Image (cartoon, rainbow, N blue to C red):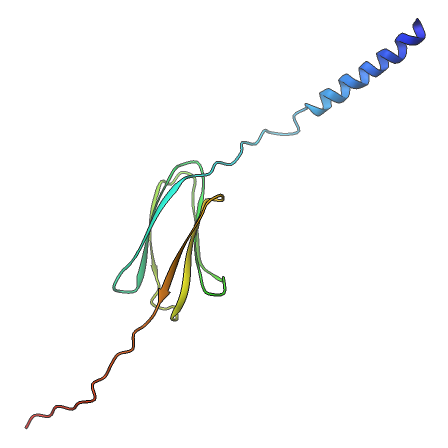
Length: 132
């Protein structure tokens, strides 16, 4: 009987110790990052500026990026966890003509808005008016 109890006790001790090590806290518990819901609006001005209005919930971050045709990041701003509304004005007058994208992301949802810059050529009149 003693020979049967010793291995049984030893097996129970190993099981309890391995179970307690599996449940041990290996550092501070990290809260899952929250995703902030957001609403955005974009509009342009006559001066060649792009206005971005962004309203979001607190608790998560939102990234706003302006990309060119090749995917190169021209502008990047991260809206913090505590901010709820942001208004930005980007000056696009120095950028060459072409297609661009404004990408707004909260880590889960991505909103992409196309922006096209096209300069109309100034038409010169072929007529000459002279006064005598």
